[in-house]
Image (cartoon, rainbow, N blue to C red; front, side, top):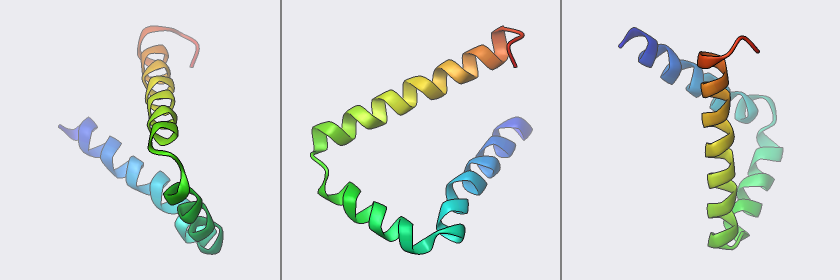
Length: 65
């Protein structure tokens, strides 16, 4: 549970940093995302998820990191 809460906290830090550091650019990016085709947005989400899973797997199962 401790690890889970640490991961959630770190996720919130990483998600919040761009909005804190570059609020104007994030507004532009948010508008661009709103205009994306849902299928394209779904593909971006899938690829991002798969990359994240691969990084987690490599971090846990190998000595690469």
